[in-house]
Every structure is written in C-alpha cells, then in structure tokens.
Amino acid sequence: MMRSKAALASPSGAAAHTPAQTRIIEAALTLFAEQGIGGTSLQMIADAIGVTKAAVYHQYNTKDEIILAVAETVLAGLEAAVVAAEAERSRARARELLVGRMIDLAVETRGMASVLQQDPVMLRFLQAHAPFRRVMERLNRVLMGGASDPRARVQAATVAAAIAGAVIHPLVLALDDDALRAQLVKQVRKLLPIR
Amino acid sequence: MMRSKAALASPSGAAAHTPAQTRIIEAALTLFAEQGIGGTSLQMIADAIGVTKAAVYHQYNTKDEIILAVAETVLAGLEAAVVAAEAERSRARARELLVGRMIDLAVETRGMASVLQQDPVMLRFLQAHAPFRRVMERLNRVLMGGASDPRARVQAATVAAAIAGAVIHPLVLALDDDALRAQLVKQVRKLLPIR
DNA sequence: GTCTATAAATCGATAGAC
DNA sequence: GTCTATCGATTTATAGAC
Image (tube, rainbow over all chains, first blue to last red; front, side, top):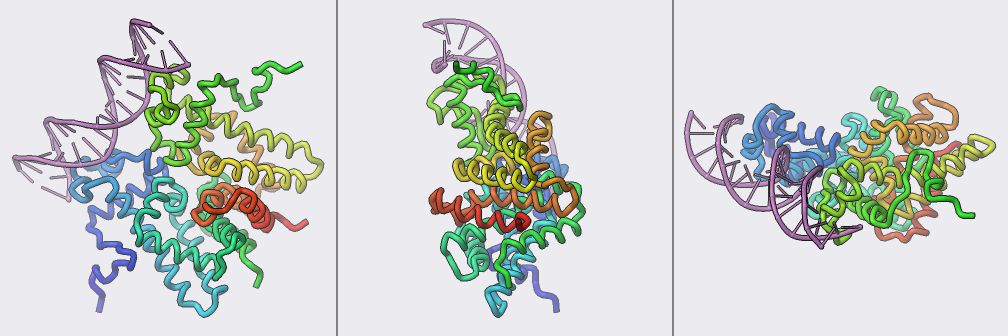
C-alpha cells in the first residue's frame, strides 16, 4: 500500500504541497539562486509562474512563509541524507555517505546548496528556526566525525563550503553534471581523513 | 616623494576615494555581507553612516555605482595578490602564494570574500564588467596552474569556494582569526597537488 | 558635504468578485 | 485558485537650500 501524503512529511516539518504551492516553491528557489533572497520580490515569483501576486498570497500569507517552504524543501533532501548517514556503523562510513549525498544534491540542483548555505537571509532563517537548526547541527556533527575542536570545525566547514560553492563557480559552468560530480568527489575526498 | 593619489589606482580601475566615499564603501560592504546586495537599500547604508540618502547620492548617482565601488575595493586586494603571484618563478609557487593571500584576505574581512564570489548580484556584475572579469580570469589561471581541463577547473573552483565559504560557516563563527587561518591553510593545502 | 522635500515606481500585503 | 483593485510603506532617484 502507498503511504498517505502526510506520512511523507519529513521530521523537520515539511508539509504536503498542492500543485500551486509546488510551482511557487520551485520558481522561488530558482529566483533565490539567481537573484538572492533579498533581491527576489513576490512579483518576480508571480511573473515566473504566470499568475498575479494575489494568487501567490492565497498560498502563502507572507514572503517569510515562502522562504520557510523553500527551506523545508531543500532541507528535506539533506535530512534524509543525514538520517541515512547516522544509521551507518562507523563515523567514517557515515561521513563518507553524507558527503556523497551532499555532492549529488548540489550537482543535481546547482545553486540550491548555495542558497541554503550562503545566502545571508537563509542563514539567519536557519538559525532562527529550531527544527532547521537541529538538522544542520546533526549534519555538522556527522561531518565533524565525533570531534568538535578547531581542526574538525574548519574541516567540516571547508567540505560544506567547497561542495556548495564549487557547483556555482564560473569555472565549472560549462561542465556537465557527470563530469562535475566525478571531479568534485575526487577533490572533496582529499579533504577527508585518509582511510 | 609620495606618489599622487591617482597613481595608486589599481590596474582594474579603482579610483581614489574621498573620506565620504570610503565611509559609504565600508558600510555597504558590511551590509552586503550581512543582508546580501539585493537586500541592502541605500537607506540602510545612509543609516549605518549616520547621514541621509541624499548625502549618499551626492557621492554615487546610483546603487550600481556603489556596488561597482565596493567591487573595485575588494578586487584591488585580490589583484595585488594575483600580480605578486604572476611574478613568481614557478606555477606551483605562484599558486601557493596566491592561495595564502586569498586566505589572509578572507580571514581578515570575513564575509568580504563571500560577497565577491557568491552573491548572485556581484557574480553578474563581475561577468558584465570586463576589467573585473579579467582580474578573475587571471586569478583563475594562476589557481589552475596552467591547465584548463575539468580536473583543474573543479580543483580551482573548490579551493576558491572552500576559502570564501568556510570563513562565514556557522561552525567557525567563534574561532579567532589566527586559529581559523592556521586550520584553513592546512585544509586548503590538502586540495593542492603535493610538492 | 549634508540637509529637507518630493516624485515615481515598486514593495509586501489585503479585500472582495468570480 | 485566480483575478482586479487598492493600501500604506519603502525603494531608487532628483531638486534645491545651506
């Protein structure tokens, strides 16, 4: 039997979306990546979908709710990766699995990861909302592999930044997804402890 | 004899600044890092300095001119590093010197590097203005060390992204500059070919 | 160099018809 | 679910006094 839509909601609180809501979230995420969150207006989102602002407001009452819905969507993929990683037997295997999934997600939707990790508006959002903060904390814990000293902190920060930032770098714009993923795996592997 | 102010202008076109212009640029850079370029208004910049919008407009006729001046300021430091690197005898030494300077600049003004490399508005600005684009191209050429294949591209992108992104990562927020710089040097060194 | 005052456009957001 | 129409606040930008 298929599970109900509600049962698919992620632990971090992602709600089920109507088709109209899905269109808004996808358009918003694209615009956030291209223009920044602060540089994206509701009019731009409405125009991208081909409706009026009022139609957008019927789905989400404020711009913050749209940012929230986008954050939930993007974090849902990451959270699934964290959950899978935490189920691994060793910390090394957990980190390896997580980093691999992070690379996949970043390459699949270039710009998505950078919105989540680097847009200043989103960074404040993640700090302000406890469920999001907890997901990021769990992700960071896996990345740091049990340690929390400066070395582990900078290593985890470097890995996360390298993945999110490399996929939007002008130098890799022309690379196809497979080539980018393959090279990115090699580079990021250098940052992780040798096994 | 001291050189005239004009002679200090960088090859990329950075102009001399009056004290009023310097205040605007510094306030703008801070706000760009905190709020994103798209999320920063001229009113915010004026408020941060303690003057009115009209006073800001007397120095720069449009918001784009302010962005331009900020880009020039930030790029001036990077360009000096590129020039110094290009004067080195070997490509390996050039890259080593450049990466070291990039880390220093990123740590000294955390968030500055991310504005330059990751804010979508700034990225479009760098592509649109040839002098800026040329500086970034020279920087990328040194980073890639003579090659331009996918491996070299992703490696350079990863190094640049790791530096710019790591310094604003929540995990390193509490680290002092010296600890951050020391660890960052170690991590980024892993990404470069072994000598 | 800075101010007050203002114009014109756009912003986030709401009311009410269909 | 989408529309037209509108509100008040804020935005970029200018004019003119000091």
